[in-house]
Image (cartoon, rainbow, N blue to C red; front, side):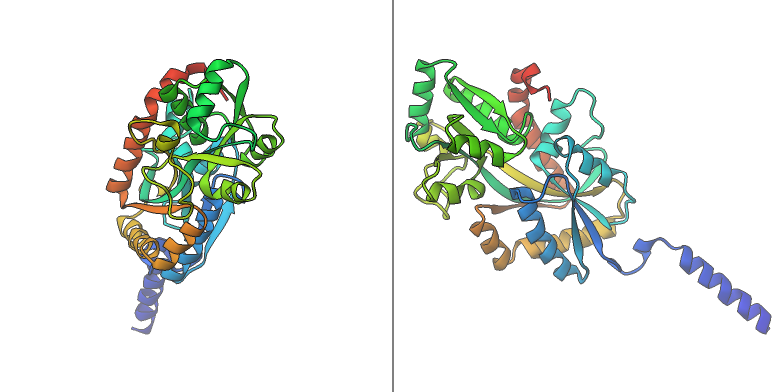
Length: 326
């Protein structure tokens, strides 16, 4: 009897040790969150705010890991190929999950088929800036560019990024004649704008606001439906360019996990994310950095939002054609 009892106990222990990690109370260990872009940008800033708050909500550390390269594809692939157990998250963007599959002729992942979505969180509104000696409104910049074809250039953080595509859409809407100059990140583009090597640059409101307030550049339009509370003196793109309809573009962020992550784990992450993003502290922190929450929580709601954004930008990308070759 003692031997039989010992064997039964051993068998139970063996079965318990073979159970997958998600069968335990989730989360039972730290979570890794991959940011597929370098440190210091708006995506990284948002990710770190979210990771800290999510960790407190879940009772486990959420460790941010920057894995940049190939316009976000390297980090996205890392998460796609990770175990679907809820311990590897991707802090993705419009560039990686709405534009990537529209632009890449041979994509290395499918943004819809290879991931489950925890939720779209919101992000940073796109903004357009000019040097101190340039015209003071987008309408004036557009008129000047039309009168001087080939003279004006604008800088973006790179070909195929949302900021590049958004500016090309602005050109389509206004008829501006401004040539794209791609940079490796927003920082070098802003430096050249302040050094008057280029006439305009596209970035995010939070990233450019300190330079605007310091008089080193002038933000001439924010791509939102109404003026931002953080900067009520800065007009919207529609106001500045004298457009009849709003011009909106946001560098939004979505949290994703590998496809086939257990539904209970995804739900736990979604519930915690909703709590985090609805907190006054998070909303205040985002506002201070020129960002805002725009929540679409859960796989169904988030997937619908991402699909809608892809449909919004597809005509612009189609019109650009070979100009999007990286």
